[in-house]
Length: 148
Length: 393
Image (cartoon, rainbow over all chains, first blue to last red; front, side, top):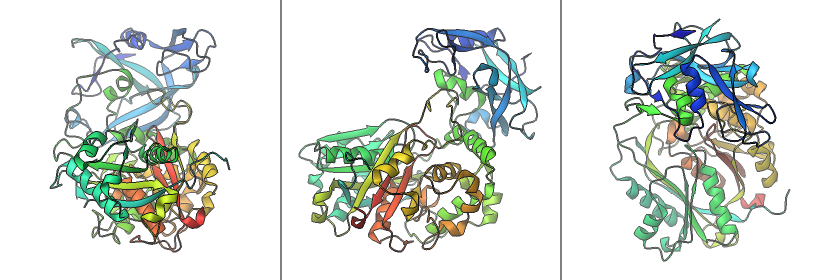
């Protein structure tokens, strides 16, 4: 799923790939509405956030695999005190930590779409929504979540 | 108990602090505060400042050892050490590193310190977010996670969910710090008691943290002076001995984007067992705890991970009467802590631990002989230490 609406009305910090190329495949994947994470080619261990070496067998040969765009809420927080001027009119807002059981239980941070005051259920199933930001010098895509 | 430890090899012989101010109101620059605290600690120890030959601090300390040594006219500097990592996680590690230097013969008189004077402007929430972010920050900041409170809130919520912990437990931690601050004239919140109602009605910062779950922001400086144990009696009648100090992180705690496998933790599951083993004591031997309240939720998890109660018992254990001196089961933050004495990145907790063991606390625990100081829960690396009186050696 994609959205052209943005969770925050005023742009917050834009993510850019690191110069050394470590996380480029992830961000490139999001531009194509895909979730891509690392899986070790040697021992099949899933790994997120990205790193150069497999934490389990220490192979440097990690593949990038596309995974299903769904997960379960692992935790959440609702921000009331704006952390920056750009967000002063955006509070309260909901940030969630989503677990992907099908990809080694890795986790991803995102915003939970919908009413920021809604009750959040840990364990609830969610699906990813790709939020495209095209009108900026370096276009990027954020991965948000909504209840299934 | 292992043979090769620092247990009992190093003593704190002097402590000193400046007056503590609300953030941005210090009349003096930061470096002046550092000098004042260090000189106060030297005076407390009865030691000539020129005997100092080393400095140890942590994370972003701006008063640097070479500048301090030059300013104080020290003959030479033999040791300078800064613990890597964020926030207050390295406070006890700075003590451990200073002790290791002394025990290893690298230096003889090392100051552990923190100085902190911040501009009245640029408070959290008033700055601008960076235009672009990369790496680990790219996985969190675009979703609005920017401040320490926001970085840790989800950990605490997960912990409370997994173990059925009620908000009343967090409230008790906050009330304990404020209770003890009322007995401490140095405390910034002295004369400003906190009621249950005021706590419950205080505004949300980021759920599960309300205003009174969060540390203050203060200006000031604090310092401790350490020497080898066999020299301690040259300087003080009541040396306080370091029994153990641990630092570090558990398995893959640095995995980006909140991917540490053990997520609902304050970071002490591997440190606390080592701490007790190296000190040769058990949690039930501990007379008080000074635990860094960046947020009450961090204290909750730290106390459980240091073996004072099982997580499922948190609601029963964390009630105000258990946490207050002199008769509580585990007097907590007996000078007011980060919440109510001063947020001096945990150095004020170390000084209070020393005062308790000297019998000089404003909220004295009768016959206190052993105390634990826990630094910077939930950051990485974290650190902790156990101080003891001579009787515990």
